[in-house]
Amino acid sequence: MQLEFLGTGAGSPSKQRNVSSVALRLLEERNAIWLFDVGEATQHQILYTTIRPRKIEKIFITHLHGDHIFGLPGLLSSRSFQGGDEPLTIYGPVGIKRFVQTALQVSESRLSYPLHFVEIEHEGEIFKDDSFTVYAKRLDHKITCFGYRVVEHDHPGELQVDKLREMHIPSGPVYGQLKAGKTVKLDDGRVLNGQDFIGPAQPGRIVAILGDTRQTKNAVWLARNADVLVHESTFGKDEAKLAHNYYHSTSKQAAEIAKEAGAKRLLLNHISARYAGKAAYQLAYQVRKLFPNTRVVNDLDVFDIPFKKQGERDGK
Amino acid sequence: MQLEFLGTGAGSPSKQRNVSSVALRLLEERNAIWLFDVGEATQHQILYTTIRPRKIEKIFITHLHGDHIFGLPGLLSSRSFQGGDEPLTIYGPVGIKRFVQTALQVSESRLSYPLHFVEIEHEGEIFKDDSFTVYAKRLDHKITCFGYRVVEHDHPGELQVDKLREMHIPSGPVYGQLKAGKTVKLDDGRVLNGQDFIGPAQPGRIVAILGDTRQTKNAVWLARNADVLVHESTFGKDEAKLAHNYYHSTSKQAAEIAKEAGAKRLLLNHISARYAGKAAYQLAYQVRKLFPNTRVVNDLDVFDIPFKKQGERDGK
Ligand SMILES: [Zn+2]
Ligand SMILES: [Zn+2]
Image 1 (cartoon, each protein chain N blue to C red):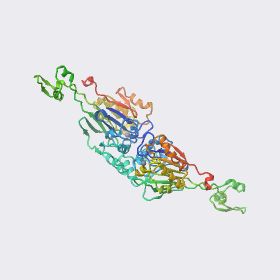
Image 2 (cartoon, rainbow over the protein chains, first blue to last red):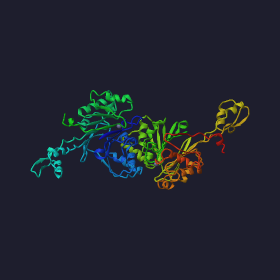
Image 3 (cartoon, rainbow over the protein chains, first blue to last red):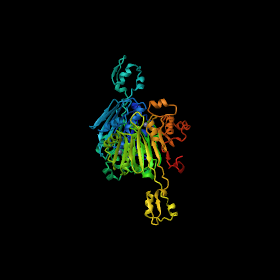
Image 4 (cartoon, rainbow over the protein chains, first blue to last red):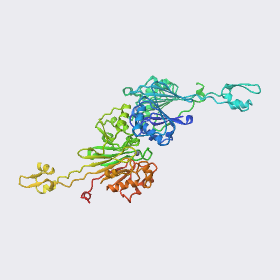
């Protein structure tokens, strides 16, 4: 599981930063890529990564401002052109379907795969399967905007085969029953409880990816105990008034959210072009006293999201 | 007057070529830029030129395929964001207005300038003012597609002031009347015909910019005596069958059009990604026996379109 940033700028593209898009790489987990927002030229950015458009399984749109959606029609068309045939689902505010369908109709684009839409009208769980649950909550932006919380389900513990071998229990169907947690009576009369032979569960990871927003309580909810929080920082620490007026956040406000939520790592994106070069990094340095594990991300940055280590799992 | 190519590829963007867009730079002529097609990330390409979006006065769309229009909403929004306030007019097939308006509505983009649409339903003259006339003709593509012929009006000859001075005619209102071509009687009784004191007219330039098309007679009409013909060459000389099946042209077909039309220069664009590096240049080399002044264009290439020289004007 990795986060790959395809566009980290605000509003308009610049030579340094493209408009918004983040990929959540779930290749080991489900052989899929999930995208969050698709600003114009996201497909161009993808040319500089190892992402194959056909692997994009889901797209989550935070809000309908152009810098977050204008790359969708082109990406969807190219995915088709490159032979993608697996279904793709787009989640987002009401209106995303009309935008995409109009673009595809007018351009007479016929996609080679089924395209589904989930227009979010109620907050809460918007997707769940065997391995992941995704939640959406409203943020505080000029137009309807959602933040997303992606929760990987815990991985059940492994069967402790070494322990069974030490006890001279031969492999066979018994192993499967024990792995399923059942109690088993062996031919020699011994009774074994599967629970005693299963290692500790591996807690799933939590990633919170937010859209454009003022500082809001819902961001804390979304980022609760998250391994990574991706939060906008359109403005620097001392620009709270500007941030408020434009429905955006400062780096300090983002750090406060990360701290209150107990997140492990804060990645700042949606950086205004007014912060170029070193000035952009300052956005993170400014707030490290408040939340040390803070980084400003750049286009094409990749961040691994590792499983929690044994110590962390045991609840330090 | 120059042509600046912003995207010269076919179908999908590649690292080498972006999707379609050409700028006709008319800065000396009218302090304006005209764009022909706006594929996705045209505004990104513009960042690498001296073009200022606020100078874009007209946009001509050849057809509604995504690789020719998906950059429009972003470009229009950025032009507004950068403070453009002059009106902008978009010409193109029926449907272009619906596409643009839906994108702007859904994204709640309010432009800082008046946006006009001219949806072309009849071939012929689509624009005329004091200095330019633009014609549109249907091409032969899978969907409705237009080619454009931009005709600069002839510049009237200059008043030959040296000649008047030699004849000891003092400057004054008489000069204005002579420049207007009138016959004037001087106080000393001499009668002068303005026509005798006006230098040769400077013929205007003609530029033909075509969209995606099979070889078609209308292309000859559009390119008649053009200083430059921009013609697609999605395929190489020997791929006429493929070109026909996909509603495109070969380099040879483009050269035949240029020759028959008596164009002075042929620029080949809309190059398929199958022709990379040297293979792309071959598209031009292949046809130079047929039409010597042929070039394959690359992204960000600029071509000057000079006035005809004296010898050419005298109608060799
Ligand atoms: Zn934004
Ligand atoms: Zn095309």
